[in-house]
Amino acid sequence: MVLGTCQTRNKSNLEKFCMSKIIAIDPDVSGSGVCILSDELEFIGTLQLWEIFDILFDLRLRGLEKNNTVIIEQSKSTNTWHKGGKGAARNVGRNYEISNQLVKFCERFDIKFRTIEPQGFSKVSHKSFNEITKWNLKKTNPETRVAGLFAFHVKRGIL
Image 1: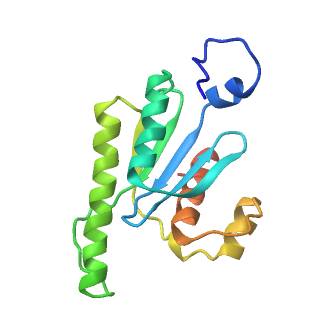
Image 2 (image 1 turned 90 degrees about the vertical axis):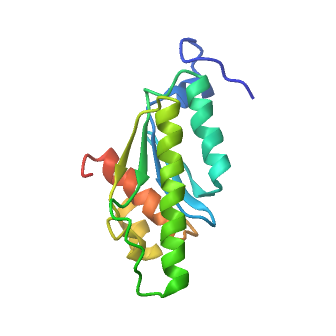
């Protein structure tokens, strides 16, 4: 469905689409946590890298790349030592590469973004997540909770 540009005065889904959004991403090889937050929660779930590229490119095509803030979790450390052993260390490196691809995509298409160091949000339980955000979601996973808490805290000026 084509919504057009934000210059239109039609107050419908277009107005909601054009609102300033926070798009928070917790990069993961098996499915990145993504949260899209404006004045309300618009989306929270896991998406593949190409699906995230589609969302970001769609913003660019509509001329909305400056209206929104993309938050990408990215550690400044490239150390892949991990207490989970070789497999976990390999995943740390692979997830880091997913975040690098997101950063490169945003840079290439001049999409406003910032990276944030991991904050330990993956340890937050589903119950605590709902208590903090008041979103009362039925189901979350660590990736969606991380993305959701990034968006929630950025919206409130905490991060």
